[in-house]
Length: 600
Image (cartoon, rainbow, N blue to C red; front, side, top):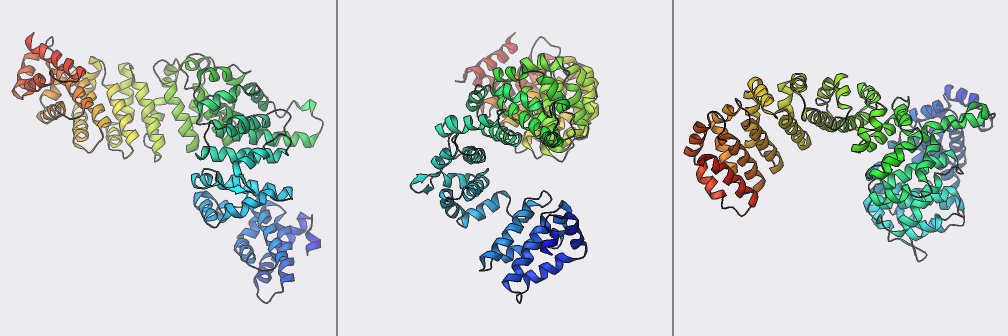
């Protein structure tokens, strides 16, 4: 069987169809089988696993993994090796679910607790290059997003040398590329997990330059992909590293080359090469977008440089409609990063009508893309962005109201945040559209959302809807009762200072209306609450309550006398006198201003 299937996929498939796998697994697990027989069974199974993805699926369906793992407990090295080879073949196949073995922080910790670090560390000095490489790869996987492992690695000694120093030696230009890249990954992951500082020389002078080198034209396509993705991850949270990377070896221009694959077909005579280029083309674009997103995350000058790189905006816009979800996600992330720039929102984003493909992306995308795309829409809807008008005309209100009903809290936040930006200084018609599409029921659901961000942004939306007098009066005439109910509930609930402050600011806006005022004046419960917050221990809340009172007693407006009298009877004037002596200058001024209304 072994000789029949080597290198012959057809024969492999035939044997599987004939039911060879369960029989081989049976022999492999029989205690009565000789070690030699078990080893031969494992070798044949390994050969079957080298075939097509369907072969691997068939092996998995027969529960091959537990059988092979059991084999590792044998005392015979040849049998163990055959089982390990077969396991490796199966786990390197894309169809094998990783959770069948070790994935996630829990499993990193299990390996760590079983002494993986100490047992693997001495292999870094092995005479065999292959062994050194595998040990290095193990460390990169163990350290990834795991502070516990990373903090330990920093202090591990191998032959009197600390691990990070060994990794730095393995980064040097004279070492094989694979070794340089994997060492850079180890140091990157340790840095991101907080075990090495971002300003440490081993990061700034060694790891970062090594990863930039991996992005150059001299490197193989797969190396360039890995280099760019690792560098994007390294610099993502740190503005200083972003600045250093952006001026190392013309990195921003170097990345533009990632979009030139596959090169023009006429230049490629080699079909194999074309196939290889095609396969890596989308990975290259994805990696470039990711790295541009990290580079432009904070610094305005870097964003400008990226956008001025040849045809960059066109490339990103094209990326938004690619068939590969991964490329689309990376393109959206890149755009989102650049959309944090007011300057770019007013210029490049407008010139390229970025909102059009973005709205298309938002129609039917997986959640991970929706989260970033809707977050970017929030930026495009800021009041200084010229894209605001066309976005509104293309049905954004309904789309965003739909997002606020998502199960995913990040999408609810972005939906309501974008509506909040949309309502800022907007005309009455847009505000009415938002209220109609959202519905008061949904508004109240959002005001009792368990996610604090959703609640804060919903209050922000209400505050923006209730601005400028005619709008305040109009909205309160149709939705006043429900809004006052919501305000009461929040002021009575167990909420933090910021939530209560926002709610009092909404009341202050209502108090600024002409007819809307009466909804406060005829509601003794609310008036008592405003009085309570005037004497609160937190200055922010006192100030917000004071603005309500000032708006209610303002004497140039109709009915001010009656309002002043009612508030005086409630003891508000006494509180104002007390506050006019406050050590806080803001409070003191506000109280004096309000008292002047009584004297005028």
